[in-house]
Image (tube, rainbow, N blue to C red):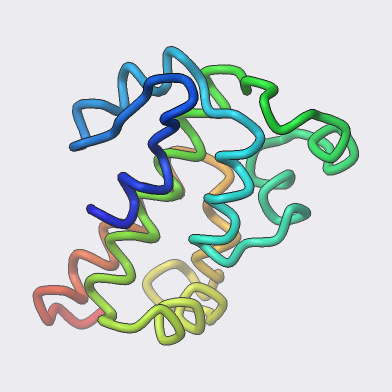
Length: 140
């Protein structure tokens, strides 16, 4: 949580994320494009992948200044994706292994790649459930 809190906090706007309850206020205030860049670095996602997940054009995202505040629905979606990655990094104990898993076809997801499901909250939830099952040794 510490690393994710650092990524999501924005001292220039007086936003400090200490725990998951702070996500509500952060969503309401909105993430900035600068924070989007930090999230992309944290998750190792490309701008193109993020644009597809957020249903926004890549070109539109590149036009925004770093201090541009994103809409609350986009901010909430980015926070959910970031939280999923933090959970995955902890369960897999290695960012590289988690990245490989995210890009592998998973049987319990009907042979879809988990990364392809992150465009909806339901997909994020499904992926998170599978990771949770792996955490407890349940074959998935």
